[in-house]
Length: 134
Image 1 (cartoon, rainbow, N blue to C red):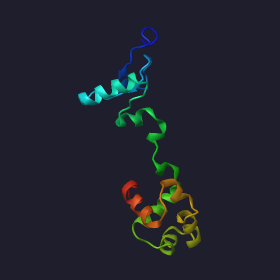
Image 2: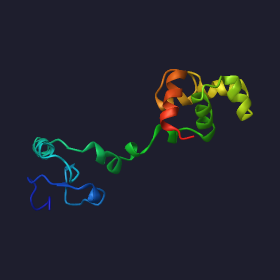
Image 3: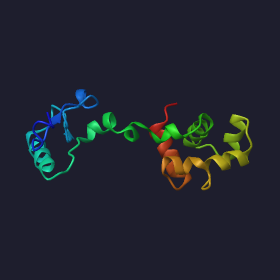
Image 4: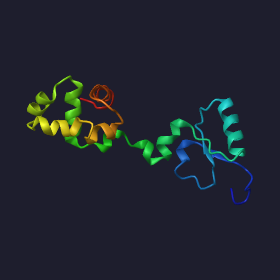
């Protein structure tokens, strides 16, 4: 369709987003409010790519990934115990690893903080409570 009508801006529903070959330049859901549709059409006319945030996970591979996906099973275990309020020594004992190994997982130089985007132990514990099921 886009080849036949290059000036027409087309949007499609999320169910066909992945298979859209008509040259769609933006994506909305069918329950989008009328003012959102108008805003998206205007944005497309200006050369922008209107994308409903709820569609992002269907379209953008990075949006489907959770920071937890970047963690090893052991790092997730350490985080769960940290979220319960255990000290490094207690976490190590519980998992059969050294306190030093726990510090490597959780400390500022460890992978965990970088992977989940936090800067301290408290933030890591809060993140784990929200994102890691028991």
